[in-house]
Image (cartoon, rainbow, N blue to C red; front, side, top):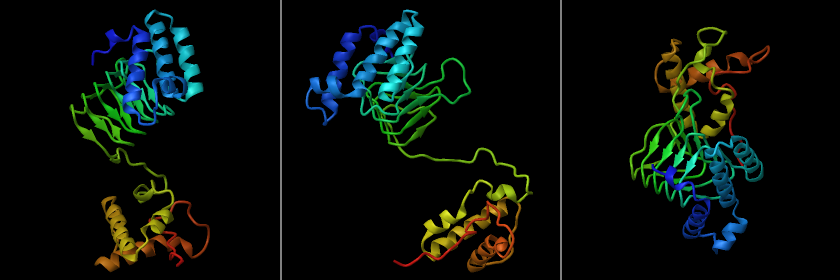
Length: 269
């Protein structure tokens, strides 16, 4: 992305941003409407002024503009971030762009997008977004990664690796990176991350799905070293529910119980 050389003529960039908004936003009836009423456009132009001040060494004034834009428009763009021409930010609320981020030409970005770091690196630590990229609402691009030209990032997607040009990236995949060690014993770690299993049970709905989820939690406990007794599909489910209800006979109930501890039949409407 070679946008740095094009970020000095603020007036020309503003005109290109207006043309981009008029061309890409069906809710924009005219250039004048975008200039007067669209806070995404106003926030981007304020950033361009702050960026020019930053390049001239007037960092205090640049950060003051950043702070006021964040307060007024709900978007937080570091004045050192480089943004190319034809940039459209729709709605703008919740947009965060970090210090070393680079955004190319003709990029479209919806609300609540984050171009952030991972919190560990120094120096260059934010994404570089290529020309013509579309980034959906709520997407998070984290770390020093490169997003190729004409790529599309779906709404709510978390991206932590390079994206090839023209690719479409959707979905969020969460993986366990470290198991918490509980002080209550070896079995605590198996279900310590489940805050309220009754919600999962209520969401399961059908008895077949509850039984399947019971088997899954038993597999999880088996992997943690807590081998449950019982064989067969029905046996596994009954053992899980018996396990979950063991503390319900008397005395204080534990705040964190096994899966389906608070299992209740769903009321018929």
